[in-house]
Amino acid sequence: MVEIKGIEKFSSRDFPGHISSTIFLGGCTFRCPYCHNSQLVLEPETIPSMAADYFLSYLDGRKGWLEAVCFTGGEPLLHEDVENLIRVVRERGLLVKLDTNGSFPDRLEALLALGLLDWVALDIKAPLERYREVTRSNVDPEKIARAADLLRGSGVKHTFRTTAVPGLVGKEDVVKIGEWLKGAEHYLIQQFVPQTTIDPAFLEVKPYGRAELEEIAAAARPYFGEVRIEGD
Image (cartoon, rainbow, N blue to C red):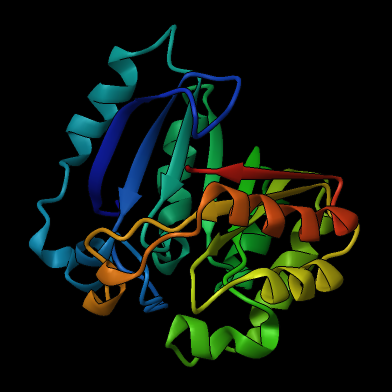
């Protein structure tokens, strides 16, 4: 079974409308400099893994009130056998949400085809032409485009979301993302958090103020059914 690196036992935010737990899986294909899960991305082996039997007992011990499980990272689809972990959750009658960066569209397609996902949040890091620059990786932008297309045609609830980072990802980028994903129902603009960032220089970056985030959101609204801001 996939190694679980952490668990947030109670959340009413990650799967709105349902009581959920969030499962953290280690490792990632990207090296976004502003990412605040640096240890989980860069050194997952230094984080103790949760025993499989503990995880199963955790799920079974919350039967009757736990409604959903969210898989996040890192990048959950980095793990080939994540399907097995998702099945364990689904077998217990729980809803499943997946957070992904879109770099494994084939695995995403398989999970969607199997009907194992109830909700997917796809992190859109930047306009496609800036992906390698922003993620500091050799990602193929066409994989990201395919992941987005898969979701849009899947019939599964999904959200596209972008972290707004001063000096790196701003209003012009969000407009280009809007032009790319025009007509999508849900778009979330996330506030950058300058804590434990992969690139220490981003610890000194001051997040956008609320008024600036509202301006970015306003620029995105012509392209999406709903645009929300998460974070202060």
